[in-house]
Length: 235
Image (cartoon, rainbow, N blue to C red; front, side, top):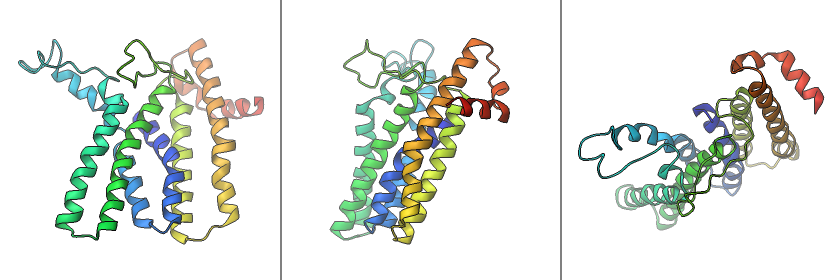
C-alpha cells in the first residue's frame, strides 16, 4: 500500500482498541495509543532508505556488514517486538523518573507505548500482505511470502478506501470514547464500518484491480464516479 493507505488501514484496525481504552476511562491513554500507531504506520518503510546505505552499493564498511532489503527485517514480527520494547523502555524511564507519575500510570502508559508500536508495525505489515506482492513477516520461513492478493500496492480504491474508512472509524471511536456515553446508534454505526463497508471496500478494490491489470496501468481512469457506481451495483 501507499503511505496514505497504510495510515488509513492503521487507523481502521486501531479504532476498536482506541474506543475500548477510552470507554474504560483512560481517554488520554487512548489518544497516546492512536498517536503511536499513526507514527509507526509507515515506519517499517525506513528500509527503503536504509537499503541505499547497505549492500553492494552502500557505504564503505557498512555494506560489508549488513544488507537491508525492502520488506525485509523491518517487516517482521521480531522488528515489531523490538520497536515496542525500545519505545516502552524509554517511556518507562521518562514517565517514572522524569515526570514522576504514579506506578500505576507509569505501567499503564508503558504498556500503551509497547502495544502502540508493536501493533503499528504489524498494521503496516498487514497493509503489505493484502497486496499482490505480499511480505515475509516470519524470518524463520525465508521461502514463504504471505500475500492475500487483493490489489496492487498503488490501487486507487484500496488506498483511498482505507483512508476514508480509517478516519471515519477513528473519529467515531474518539467522539464516542470522549463522551463516555455508550450510544447504541453510534456503536451500531461503528460496527457497520467493519461488517458492511469493509467487505464492500475489499470487493470493490479487487474488482478495480482486475480492471487495471486487464487493460491499462493508468489507474486514474477508474477513479471516476460512474465506474464506482457501476461496481457497487454489481455487488
